Image (cartoon, rainbow, N blue to C red; front, side):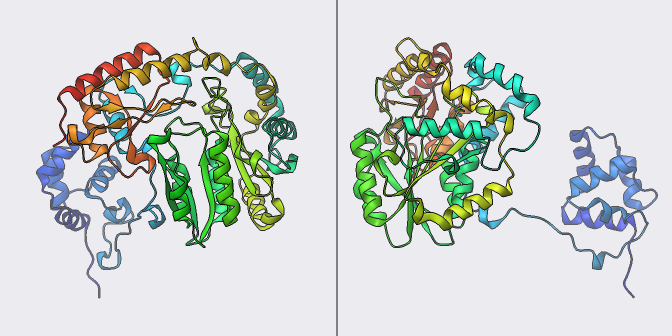
Length: 489
């Protein structure tokens, strides 16, 4: 016959496993704001009484045991020998997944904020908190269409939204696109995940830039594929290194990813660079995925060219949206366009359609303003001209960073990011995450270390230059002060 145990027995057993004494429980209660004294704990341990529900919950949390087990499921006894504790861990599929744009350094910044410290955030490309406003016409149209957006749309999106996107694709000279080749999504992020899941089998390889926007690597990894990173060359305006790409293509390579304009470097790839990538893709029969979410944030009179316009004989998937150009990141509206040799990707398109249907549809109110946003006055152009906020903030941050001894940066041509280089020998930096944490603790400024963008050296970090010049000036003065004395230990 199995031995049974009282509440006191279970409590003492759990305390032994956690190496805790009665005094430890009393201190834990004080920290948690739970009113329980020494006499109460003593009575629980001696078996003279059992705790009320609030105290029981506190004890189970503190001792890391199940509350039902501790209480005996409402009775006084339970068989400990047949009640093993079950725990739940994250999936091993997440072991190699990285998303440090909102990672450990950000977690520490959030902790500091909860404790009352003001943090200047240069870590995420979210325009609204920095005073960038959605065009009034877009807000007006959404308000007036909300009553018509209460139900699901077609899984690929509203006809009017996709029609406007198709016309935009025509302006970008993307070939062989009709309305059924367009899919709306809850931001480009959802569509990246969907597109990788539909393509990759275990062991398939996909070429992704380094540095990258880390969601590409994360989604490829989650889908079972292997992200193979090709180098973007800082000495050549952060353009892709063609020889490195060629070395890394093999029989398992299915596709190549391009981020143009680039996050995190702000690079803009000229037509001749894009043509070289098309030539490699053509030689090895690769699909092309092109992330072009920043295509309307191009400065200095430069032209953005969609790589799909140069590859009518290849299957291309082009991603864009309104989050950045129309300053509506919270609306979550993006799209992807299938173009070129769609006859070579019938099975893949079936997979896309299946996954698109499974998520039902994207945000319908956000879809409702695509036509207005793409067809109306493009207020973003005011930001990217001389005198405009994004342009002038780019000019300021580029000069300010290069004025700091030991820091250098390539001038970005698009988007609102810059990816400075650190003289690691000068500052003895061997861990860029530790550098970012040290800077956060010392100067209360939040940046993202290069490792967050799958850059394998501890010598870069990304700055978002969306804050106004007054705030950027404050941040750069703090950074200059920090580097004047910093040595990593």
